[in-house]
Image (cartoon, rainbow, N blue to C red; front, side, top):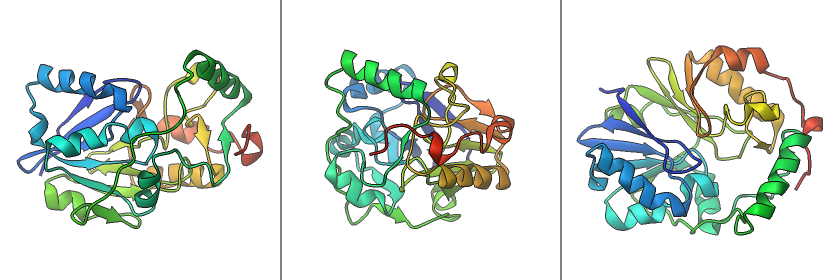
Length: 246
């Protein structure tokens, strides 16, 4: 059983490669445009794309599933995702049907500025159609990762999206997707993600992460940080704090 992993940053999203039996599991892909940078980072580490046997998508968003189809064309990779992700991946657009908003007004304004500077940013991605051999989970799962050679558990961690999942290794390292983040802290996010559908479920996921023994958090955005940051900042926001509901 293995816990060794590699951090890749082909764009604005951190991706993680964890060793499995005879290859790797990739946690998340970046935007579609990040694929060439991803291949360069693999080459720098002398890893072949064919060695990636699994992709675990922490959720369906454009910056997490963007170049999934590129990998499906080049490898025999299997996808691991929450069952709620299947329909959302097929649509090819970040889900806007469940309410929510930006974590605070500063982030709301920053998003508007970013959109002005990047007019092509439309929260869409190439639709991904899951296949019969892909693996869907319905909640926490203690067996799948161990079966492929990882000392770890999959936790269902909704709040950012309905389909959010995280990978918790037995040594306390957690790859949380957007269940927490450390960038941009200067915008007052307090380790929350910038957009949340349900703050109560979001902080409930923090409680689950803490209760299950996580020690070090590896987010999709920002640098890793100790679990005490979640303990110190939990329940700092409420649903009333969220800006621009959809």
